[in-house]
Length: 425
Image (spheres, rainbow, N blue to C red):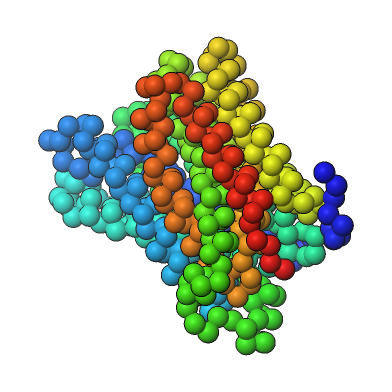
């Protein structure tokens, strides 16, 4: 595979590095705030639902609240993307941090069912929906923001660093929960210690919002605004009229992204515990290794798009993703004491995740870029992010290789979609 003839990388300026740092930090904190709910779902269930209910029912209700955040992503993301394409990227990019920080802090301070009764879970639902709306605008807005600030030949690197920051938020959440359990006794964590990660996330979220005030509007949007080329009608209407192919290809590549993250990282611990009787401690360490290697791989693969053609990288990454999935679920069970190494290997094979935002950024013109990314990414993530656990759970009784087969199938779909995806200047 030959380098692109038009690839002329230039160094990132100090201003661009500052923008990348602020964007990545904010993205990591938002994803941290979003995922700690899942890590603490069992304790949340005990505090916000009646003690008279069965434990499994309370936990199911808590995960229902967690899922409500995913359902709110498309609507929240589309609304924020609309204003991002019409009024500017910076305003919406700063608003998304505030919309995440406020409910996260309130979750850590909200009294439980014994104090508020049914008002407690209803309030928690509202806060979770607010988080979902915020996260729906964060990733698409961040990708658009840093790519439009990046210098020539460094768009891939800039986008990859932000994507690495987003996945780093999942890693940060895992580390904070491990430190919490290491520092406090189990009864203290169950009583009030579980609130600490939410309070920390809320406080740091306000800090990220304050820092983002110093960001500048992107040069691309400023130029469109000066030329009066911003969307005068609904961006969604333009997308559905002129960019249906870009939407479809972007949704398919996002499906592959969700499969890689959900199946190889988030679902790996319970699947290994259930299918192959690996201890929870080992699977947690393996999950951390997979997340760390995933973060590294997306940055590396994204930066390679500044040098090599995206389509060729898509094919190579799709094959690598398939190999990583087959290794984790097909070979690792025969070497249970090497699970961490196989999990790390599967994370390194997830470079396709870093190509997805690059493909989406190129699929839409600047006038509707924010809305195009948000519509495709959030709808696909809401649908497939919700369906993937159910599909895997229904297939694993038939074959323990079901998770790997599913990832291989989505890798094929994603590689074809990335190859067929349109490219705008």
